[in-house]
Length: 285
Image (cartoon, rainbow, N blue to C red):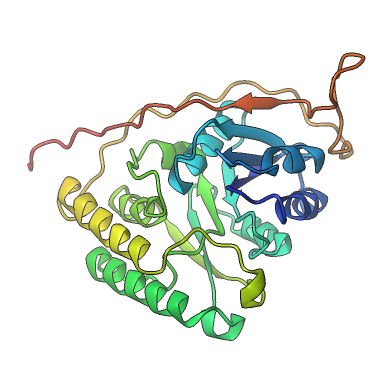
């Protein structure tokens, strides 16, 4: 299984460097940590690059779902099979991210399963997560115990072929429903998360507005997939041949820089908006 780590980041300069360094130190494949800077105005891209990540940038803020899609498309193009996604704020310990690699089915969508109460999550987060879990479980016809955790492992080709539309936080709910409709195996793995003291927390998730948007997207997805009966596959980007990884992990700061140039990672991509696959739903048989 060739796996990478994808870290969507927005205004995350305070924590993203440590997340990148800790993830790269544990990862079984060198050069496999990608940070998608979703239009930050701070030094998120520079800090992530200095820590050794390959940085992909959106010139404008487009949303977490768009950042995840950009990272997955790039990862598939350069030859990875699965992507583990984790947040840039340090909430997901990289050791927990690496644990998701132990699930043997390379085609499975692997969901991190948090114990929010034990982790000390804010009350508003516990309530909003419970609401989202209730509605998604109801519509999916099966119990889903944590539908909002950003620590996941995605099978790249299958995920990108599902035609997920949302570009915000509802991406993560929509991809679950489309995976069920597309008969993608779903595996839940208990994980530990870290919630810092309230005065140190950085979040762009609105515990009232965003769950409402998620429910709206869920209803739209159910209508599109006709009650989760089937999701037609759309074309996923083709993987490109990649050079064999070095036998020993290379330093994350390996660079190709001309004299006098700023030191940069081996690859940096300026990500531009890509068209979203719009599946065409066939008539009922």
